[in-house]
Structure formats: structure tokens, C-alpha cells
Length: 61
Image: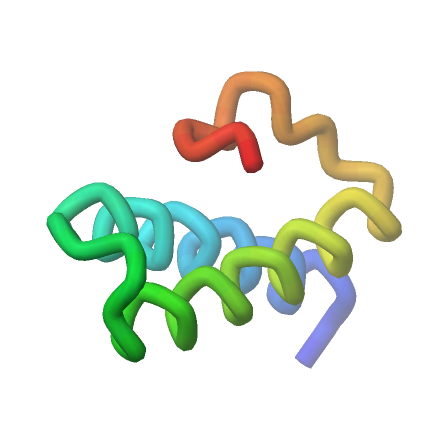
């Protein structure tokens, strides 16, 4: 997988994870905490890769 393909997949997953986070009502649930951990991991990967998340990040945590 090329770097470009990896970034594309990461951006898509980042968007998907945010949708799930916004759907979960109980922010203290185990499911939300797991998804939030993945959100943070993806955010670190994308920022370290030079992706500007200003427009992509709906959660803003």
C-alpha cells in the first residue's frame, strides 16, 4: 500500500469513526470510549502525516 493510499484509508476511517461517535448518546459507555481511542489514534496519524484536520474534525476533542 502506498503512502497516498494509506492516507486515503485513514481519512475515510477518521470520518467513519466520527460518525459513530456522534451517534452514541452515552459518552461514558464502553463503546464510546473504544471509538474515542481509535479517533485519537487516527488524529495523531493524520496530523503527523501533515493532514490539516480543520475541516475534517467534527468532534474537536
